[in-house]
Image (tube, rainbow, N blue to C red; front, top):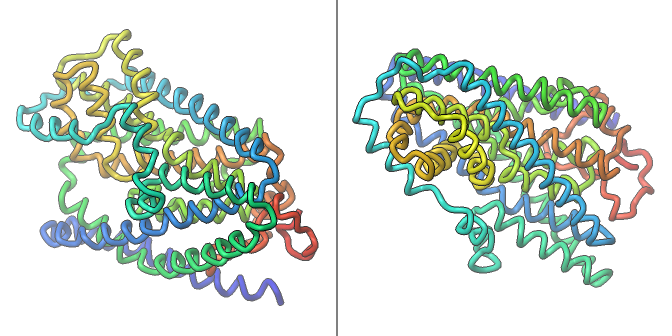
Amino acid sequence: MSTAVPATKRDRTHYLYLAVIAAVVLGIAVGILFPALGKELKPLGTGFVNLIKMMISPIIFCTIALGVGSVAKAAKVGRVGGLALGYFLIMSTVALVIGLVVGNILQPGSGLHLTPEIAEKGQGQIAKSEGTVEFLLGIIPKTLVSAFTEGEVLQTLLVALLAGFALQKLGTKGEPIRRGIEHIQRLVFRILAMIMWAAPVGAFGAIAAVVGETGWKALQSLAVIMLGFYLTCALFVFVVLGLILGLLARVNIFKLLKYLGREFLLILSTSSSESALPRLIAKMEHAGVSKPVVGITVPTGYSFNLDGTAIYLTMASIFIADALDKPLTIGEQISLLVFMIIASKGAAGVTGAGLATLAGGLSSHRPELVDGVGFIVGIDRFMSEARALTNFAGNAVATVLIGTWTNEIDREQLDRTLDGRSPFDEATLLDENASDPGAGSSEDATQPNTR
């Protein structure tokens, strides 16, 4: 009887995501047949993504504060964070190198003649970029609560970590606060579950707008770089990440991606990996990864583990240089790669953020190439989907790996989840018995998530 309820709830959300697929198809049709109407529908997609982004800060705060606050020793948090950052740096570098290699092989910009009209659009992107110092200082919020009101992920991460460490120091006196945050977390995830029912409307508006604005002609002229970029991202996810996950964690990449199938559909329809961030946190906890690991790895990875963005930056740089008949030398490519390793850490998982980092990198190395950024604008929306999907897959893999390396993962629960024997509760998006070693509770032995 205990399995009947989740099955019914799961069926309802199954229809929801079927509606999302139908909405995407309908949006494409509207964008092609009625482009003017499609452009007018853009606020629908923007509004839905904004609703999701509205929930990110409170979800990250609750998850991290509870996860860190339940850990007996602060050293464990530092170990998880240090291991995660080291892994992110290595994998982002690998992604950048792959992007350079494929870009040099395909040379997608060769033979194109870009017009002067793109200059103004390209120059406009530079103003949005920021230096490393500004990025680091931007992690510190103006006030304790401004991190929530401004929606900055890293600022929220900092405040949540401080709150978690403070709960550790309070000990038993902090238990009432910890229980209060748990209640807030339940409320926040319930609100998120309600918002998800607007996904078909948001997907319809977003797809109709981009097809109406871009059309098929723009896609045809840039088919080589788009196809090459998608294939490169697929190669990185299924080969590079797949091998690492299989060898180091003994987990099948296809099973993990299947488990996160609905999140990939959500990202595909909204072109934003942030739209699936709250669900990734909930699903990773349900899969058996401990709260501290999930709470630290996932939000940090959204700013520091952008594999798809790294591939995009290098391929787009080579494309622009070739298209403007000003190819980059090997030395310039290596220098740009080093810059991108740092600059890509500040790119958010939202549509269009990669353009700012791309413009900043070109501006610092070859200013005359910045004019070409405007040509990328036309297809950036479509390429951002592959970026977001790759970024999301990279963060999911990273969470499993960090959990494995730190022995903060319930292997039995992970196997049950990936095999479909422990379905995720789509109604609440919250696993009441997620792995929480700090809580010290193992008395509910009937629950599949209990260690």
